[in-house]
Image 1 (cartoon, helix red, strand yellow):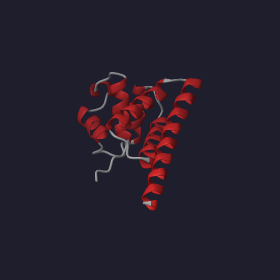
Image 2: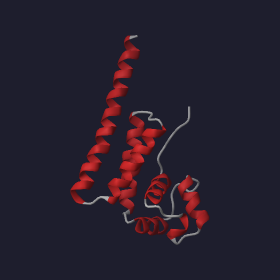
Image 3: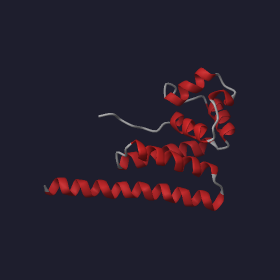
Image 4: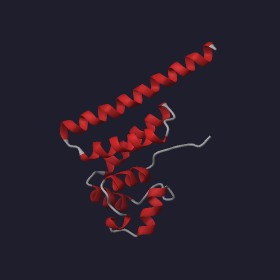
Length: 130
């Protein structure tokens, strides 16, 4: 079974693509950017991460929050690729939005997480009964 996990690099790549930015737009070496996005570098230097976050218009904390939210949704269920794309789009919207819109999108992501948790509980019950 393949383990799927969102990393800081995954979130950076999703945001970069959503904003139609290239790896060269970050002022760091393209190879380093690529290694961060692919997960080869799992924990970028704080100053590098701050620079990338700034270019994306988000904070480092928001990137880490998104990693946690997305991994929580994955842990609750094993979504298919289309679900990953949906979560990625919601993530990008969350970070682009401000104020009330941000709160609404975050609630939407958390709701999606709960939906999957309930589906898994239902599957577990059926497996135990069957």
